[in-house]
Image 1 (cartoon, helix red, strand yellow):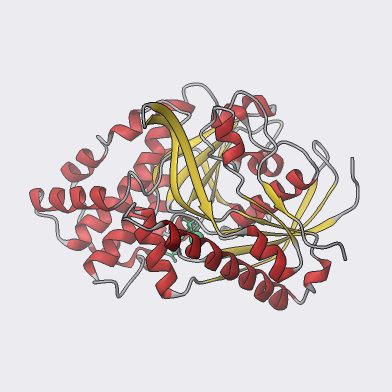
Image 2: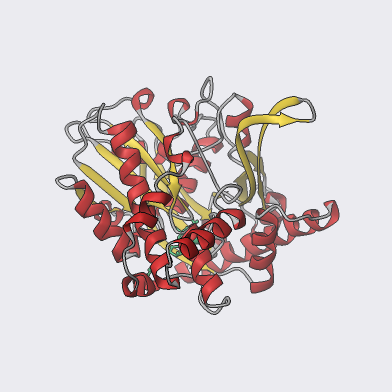
Length: 393
Ligand SMILES: Nc1ncnc2c1ncn2[C@@H]1O[C@H](COP(=O)(O)OP(=O)(O)O)[C@@H](O)[C@H]1O
Ligand SMILES: [Mg+2]
């Protein structure tokens, strides 16, 4: 076991493609005595043209191999700049940072094997070339975490449960960690659980539908529904929400993961058609999508978690933790389960996932596995990611 404490930067840019969240963590020890402390966090935005291209590609619009290669390296530069800007902001010399853990930008995720050229294939692609990050920052970079899990028959997602287990498990309290990014995912931590008793899955959409509807109705002038301002002005149309709740994804058994491939453009077209059928105005539909987000999480808990485990607390993180309508719906539907923002555990809601990738990078750097097979469905533990080394200092 290496006891030497290290400073680690975690970088996360999720399906929302709103930008890069960066966490600075101080990590020491090894599980079960791993100590991780979040020291600081910040975020940067993607350049507008780059964001547009990420969304276009993630929606599976055609891209040539050459353009994909260029985007991959350009993102490497952007992540490196984000890491260096964060160091400046945190007043920490990059020379003091031992490792960067970068999730990368997902442009495709097919966790369940599907027929491809005559045989079953699962795959995932996170881009942002780590060699560029290591070269530009001088910091050894761990990236590309998901493929090792898929190679062992897992879905390559979710990976944050490892961090949830380290940060939130409790001997007496049953807890669920909920992250509301583009997609919503939960990690179930039964009271006194061992890693093999942890399970986790994507429950469905979080902000992805709300963001897309807001961008659609405002012709791109607004990117998201700040503080549920628009949804609050809409009416509740119960029949519309009921219809949304018939989404077959909700019934699918875990382990399961989803993304923009499913909750993308075609899904939004379906929502717009449903709105017409139910005579919903734009804000009514934004409200319905917001309530659907909350109720799909509630549905997953009732269907797959609460019948088996006593849960006392729901710990919420991600951008959706700042949406008051989602929070109100969750609180009302789940009482007496206590809703707590992750900041109550010293993890600011917008730093949770970047902090998690700092932890995962630290584990990989020390040759330790960090997938949770009961969460991803993998046959066995895997050391996640690939390492691009910087020259020794
Ligand atoms: N104040 C807020 N009110 C409502 N929604 C918010 C607010 N702040 C952030 N969000 C939502 O959170 C999303 C970003 O969440 P994030 O956790 O970064 O997701 P991802 O991991 O997919 O990038 C934004 O696109 C937006 O929809
Ligand atoms: Mg984000």
